[in-house]
Amino acid sequence: MRPAWARRLLALGALILVLFVAGATAAEPRVLVLADLDNAPQAEAVTALRSEMRRSAGVDVEVMAPSSADAVTVADARLIVTVGSPAAHAAVALGTDAPLLHILLSRRTLDALPHRPDGAPWSALLLDQPAQRQVALIRLALPEQARIATIASPETTALVDALEAAATHHGLGARSAVVLDTRSLYPALRSVLEQPAVLVIPPDSRVFNNHTVHHVLLTAFRLGAPVLGYSAAYVRAGAVLGLYTTPAQAGMEAATLVQRVLSGGGLPPPGHHALFEVGVNPTVARSLGIQLPHADTLTRALHAQEERRQ
Image (cartoon, rainbow, N blue to C red):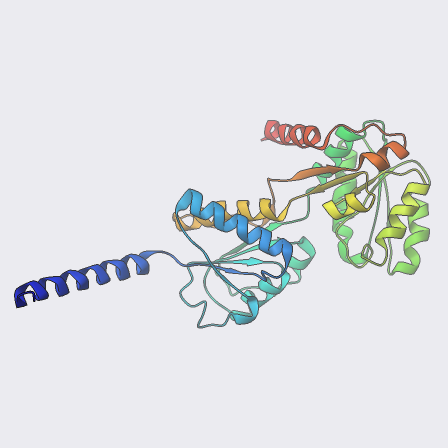
């Protein structure tokens, strides 16, 4: 049996160790991610965010379902990252003062969020691709095309205006139509594609959704119009080109902004992703008599263009 002084020394050492660990844990900033891990794109974004934070900053993040978040569970968060629309709405509704960073959101969804209290910091990385980037891709991949065409609902006319301005800047013509419902979609589609053009599909679920996408792509194909979609799913469904940020890329970029905040910096204004991918459907392209460069070639060329403009 150890003497009493030895037992006291061991107890004191254990107490110091506990206090040290507790102090270190308390000092580590709490980064909270609100996401639905049963949703595949959200899970992919969270995995990339966590991996990048561990790799580059040695910081782990806590993940919580939006339905589990309340004023108590988020109270001591240094930063909250929301993944997807439900998480964004849940975080804003809590009224927390913690900085919010929204990812996997479109501009339309962001604009529909309630405003935060004055002075409460927030930002977003938007899934929408900049109009200049979309038109630049068309010029790279389809240099023989002289015009673009697009259709939108009244809620997304700003996207149409930006595309038309970008097309003019690049020396392309543009035709567009605004439709109120799907009944007027197909007449509008035939109208804007009356002359040869690239159909640019904006992220407007009121017009382009699971009920309409197949018929839209088929109509464009029959009219000989290549389509630029905003997701890999559109490319798989028959769009000749796709321009999109993957969930993993969104998570990686979010990690960069999280580290910026943890280092004492502020969140930047909401903006577009710097990371993106180009997708191509060579089968549909060949059927339209189009020879496309490889997707990686287009991605690198588009990144190089943007770097030269910076």
